Image 1: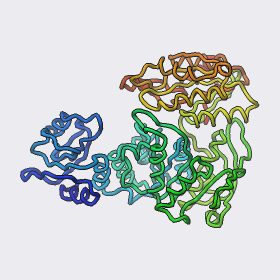
Image 2 (image 1 turned 180 degrees about the horizontal axis):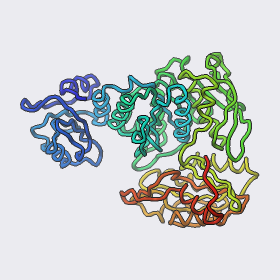
Image 3 (image 1 turned 180 degrees about the vertical axis):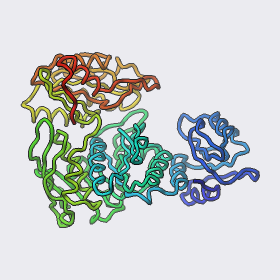
Length: 523
């Protein structure tokens, strides 16, 4: 693959991003590699001077290693002798030029995107499971857990960001196309729009699951309005929009969808009992709970409107996951499968046995109750998880192990305090990716907001010991919720990914120690 200097200039001019250019007569004008990392350079590389942490020395390194052109928001003396493209926004320029370099792989994929404060990963995995039924397993996935760009084991790898940097995203999409993948299901975070990682990308289907305050802080969104604005951009850039009618700020969400999408291509879904007298558009799909036990959830989906009835997806569905909130996630994914051409039988078969690493992985022990490992990592997901446990399992004693990450998500911490006060009987506050912050200070910040008359608190920074102590103290009718990290096998400490067994492995080890090696986690 390659891209010419002239093509780059034309693309940047077309989008009104180019401020100036410097073309060197003695330097090749065809770029055969693209990078924003000075350590990852090949001969004739197009190099992007990107990010708040960019230093001019990185450009010197890139030039010495073979870069011949750089894109930046200002000229640098270190780039003397290179082609220079000076732009108004380097992140937007990188997205546009990366898409062109990788020959617009999105044009060869049916692209589905999910956004929402919670439920993105579960919904994405559900839909991938269903699409794999009709395309022979050729559904690519970009998620906060794993990325899958092909059918071979080496084509699946742990993700570093919910939505990758634009250059990495378009490279992965090109790899997926070259590997024969026909569909792509992806999570799109608010940061993806804040940082222009998906700038210029249009989705065949765009889902808005829900919205609640999150990711507000020094290194993230300055306020909720900015967070919501970034979330809404997914709908503005989708050909068909699917919206949870029960979401907060529904009027703003629906209005965003209508700016670029005809109402005939906007679909709404909600639970059977939901009513909003102010809603002046019909709800297209309804879902109703049928049965939940320790292992699975059964619900029914109804096609309510005339346009919904054009999709043959009405009927009963079973999930191999507990949690009434997963009925909403499942409904969204089933609608996506219907819009992609599936019928009820195909969808029901595809979603039936989907499991997600670190999501609602449960174990019924002999003497220490039910142990659940889940990625719940904000107020909305914590409240939903604990409310479900309280309502469906005879008001059990709820013991929670949780921490908050450092350097980001500061706005989540009061939400942890509120949710623990509302539902938890016992909380172990522990370490969860503290980064450059002091984990003791993070735990104390959460603890300061907890009503100790309702929830007893222990601060135990050794996460493995916290999990051990929580399971050990649990009685046979109690519930232990291990929240936040899911299947993550690292702790991010002072800029280093420090190996960690994962909550699932630690919990299983504790259960084996307490009850013998006879239990296995089931999702």
